[in-house]
Image 1 (cartoon, helix red, strand yellow):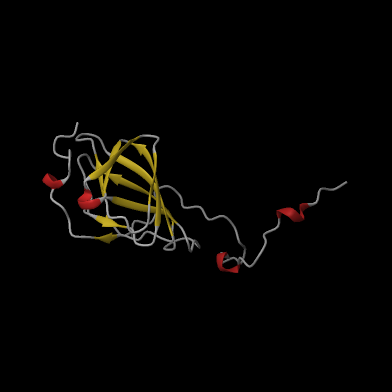
Image 2 (cartoon, one colour; image 1 turned 30 degrees about the horizontal axis):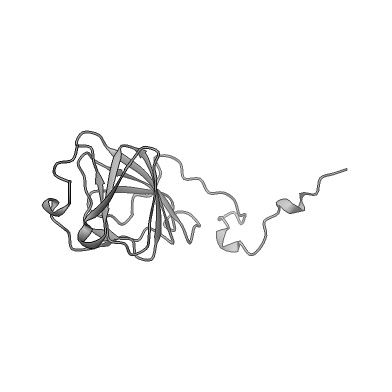
Length: 161
C-alpha cells in the first residue's frame, strides 16, 4: 500500500511566494550574503537573513544585531512591530519605562520580548566584549529614533561592571 502524500501538499494561495522559476520553495540566505540595508538606532550593526528586502517574506524580519563593547543605542521604539530577541553572546541591558528609569539585564541564552511602541535603549554591558543578538520582528524591521537621553541619566550605566 502506497502512503497518502496529499497531506504534504502546499495548501492555499501561495503564489506571492513563487520564485522566478515559478515554484514555491524555502529561500536560503547564505552566511555573508545577508542584507545590511536595514534601519538602525545609532551604532547597532543589523543584518537581515529574512526580510521583505531580499526574500518573499511579507510579515517577518529576522536578523542578527551586533553591538561593540560599551555600545548603547539611541532611544527608540519599533512602531507596530512585536520584537523578539535572543542573546547569542555577551551581556545586554534594555532600559525602558517612564523616563527610561527601569532596566532588565540579559546574558547569553536569554530571550526577550519587546512590545510595540515601547521606547527603550539597548546596551552592551561589557566594556571589552561584543554583544550579538538574534532578533525577529513582525511585520518588518521598524526603527523609530526618539530624542536621546544622556548617559548620566541612565541609572547604573556609568558604573556598570
